[in-house]
Amino acid sequence: MRDAPNENINAGNVTQRISWIDNAKALGIIAVFYGHIVAKIFVTYAIPTAGLQLKLIYSFHIPLFFLLSGYLVKETHHRNLFMFMKNKFMTRIVPFFFFNILILPCYFINAKISHQSIDISQYFQGLLYLLTGTAIFNPITWFLACLFSVEVINYFLYPLLRKSIILLCMAMVLFYIMGWGLSYKAATINQYITIQYYWCIPQAMVAYSFYLFGDLIATFPIFHEKVNPYLNILLLILTAVCVLATFNLNNVNYSVLLDMCKYGSFLLFPLTAIAGSLCIISVSRLMPSFSFMSFLGRNTLSLMGLNFIFVNFTNISFIHYSMEFFSENHFSVFMQCAFLTCMTLLLCVPLVILLKKYLPFMIGYRKDKDNEQALANSMIQK
Image (cartoon, rainbow, N blue to C red; front, side):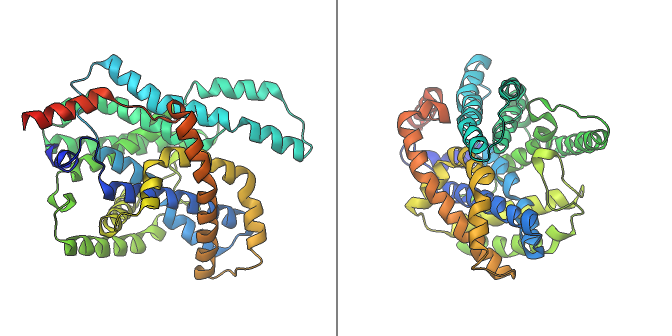
């Protein structure tokens, strides 16, 4: 069932990347940066057009990453549990801890500038919270904790699910129902008492349904490299219309928030999330490959980890000064957010390059020799 994506990867060099995947991940991380900026504008200035754009972006941008992860899922059932956990610890857990600890000096500097007192005990308590998978210092890294839980679930279930598309579809629906139900109950209970989510388990159940959907669409011919581009254009039009027609119908306050288990409508949330993700994929397949987009696509983990520095400490200042040059209509809000998105992304580039050069093991860069050897053996057999 999983032969289709490997055909693209093995067509050339063993380590060849799928260009449209990099494009899709790049568009996804751009949406993350844009979404955090437009959210700050809406929360700070209560601009309705910013709120509508916030709701649109948040309706699909995080499900897109889980869907792409599922599309690229590798055959892990042949690997023993120790090697699997070692790989995920180095590529998920280590970056999770690193990007939470990396941002600590920013809190101290901000407290010093604003003349606030520093309670060291709270920071030590926060470090303990990290052990539960709670992204206490860098909330954006909740995605890494959730993805880790999703991949652990998939490790145990994938050998069974890969045998039948029917089983995969059933699991996709079942996990969504369980995750949505658990999150709904938890949100209701949280009105009275606070519940600690260990390693984002409720969110991971919902995310796993998108992960499985990504695995499912990898079997469709339209997602192969050599397909009539008009099919991608048709898919783009259909999904764009679907997203625009449904995202504002979802009955949720402000926007969908996966990290806080706020999904809104049981049916409209997955419909818009999948349509939006497929829309981005269609755009990425029609785009040519640019070096800068490829760079963004290859470094989404680092960019996501660094984004919170701007979200929490500098975006409000950037927005405050830029408000003098922009009005409140949709186009003006878009141009303002696009400008600030480009600026913050460019500011992240040198940091990403430095981390990749001097601390690659802390941001998840390591050669997975088992996977490379498996791909090499498959080529030899062919």
